[in-house]
Image 1 (cartoon, rainbow, N blue to C red):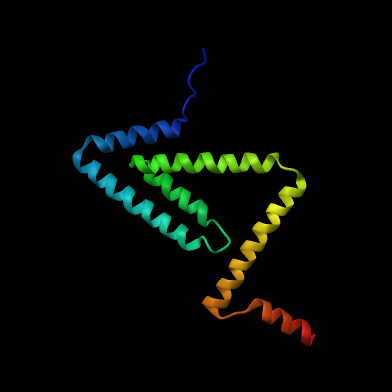
Image 2 (cartoon, helix red, strand yellow; image 1 turned 135 degrees about the vertical axis):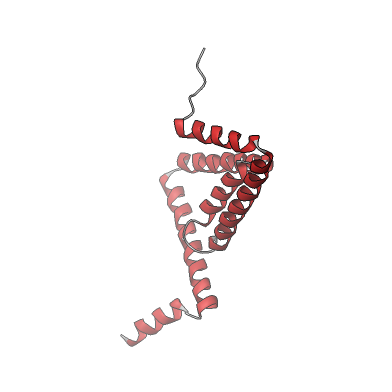
Length: 138
């Protein structure tokens, strides 16, 4: 019979600290409010960064992780997200190199298009037109 996996010491310490905070009614309410605000802030920043290249989705998932400390629905949603991300990752790694190159290329084209449209419509900079103009004059 296998022993259950040991939790890291820092996770055990955090769990004990949260239990001590929850033991006090005022602490329980303050913790819920703090977790709600911190999670909402991280998720909001993540959602704002999704169209840009960078850690948008990672921040959304981190915000779900913060909410999962206190809210059961967030814990279930985070588990659902983890299962699907791991499933997608396993599927991609089983594919041939050609399929992975195509998937990576589609991802790069998508990110480049989002960056181009973001620059064009938010800052008024048309990178493609500028590049074509530069090539035509040099």
